[in-house]
Image (cartoon, rainbow, N blue to C red; front, side, top):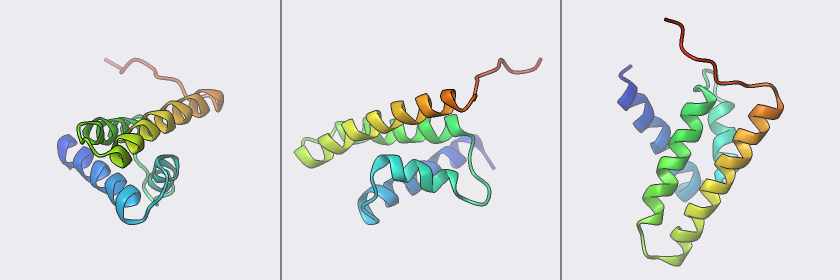
Length: 93
């Protein structure tokens, strides 16, 4: 699957979790990671940050607040990954 298509699908799934299923941003990340074939954790975090950035462009207070919660959830998730031993290693040449 094309990288941009995979990223688009992650973002669409996060939006569905947030706006349709009314999950918190953190729970949306956990939902993604609980799939039978979960994405790379950094792909999931990037998708949540992208959705948060998109939401911040709206001038509705509820969506703006949700945007902030997306950034907070992404930060917490990254901290938890690091605590569990996840490290970003340089790509192999």
